[in-house]
Amino acid sequence: MSKIIFIVEKTNDGFSAFAENEELPIATSGDTMIELKENIVDAYNSFAEIKGLDEITIDNITIQLDIHQLFEFYKVINASALGSRIGMDKTLISQYVNGHKKPGTKQVNKILEGIKQLGKELSSLELSI
Image: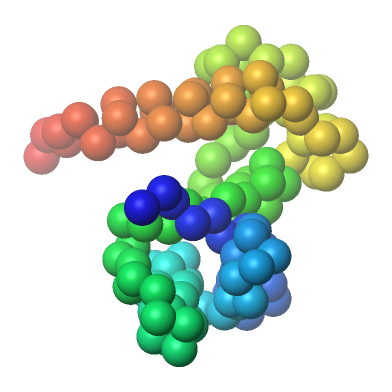
């Protein structure tokens, strides 16, 4: 089964998500990203039961955030420092983060790859006492 894409938006009190495929009338919300993912699976599986479709697990969904939403949710990521790390002009990344400019696929991939690389580095660290 191919992954089902859900578009996620930050709200004042959590997150909302809806299926990218307009033929899937599925939308839900959650207070946290973990809760949202669980609610997406529950909402889809309720729809699947009615329509006679196969049920899914969390592994069958893809969460999509735009760059602005990503930095809104993960405020711990400093966009300027990330830009320096990946060789992107700090003014340009700031325009993406603030929603003043929309990045192309190449720029989105560059940002995402930088974030994933940072995550790998951080997850492999040990701290001394």
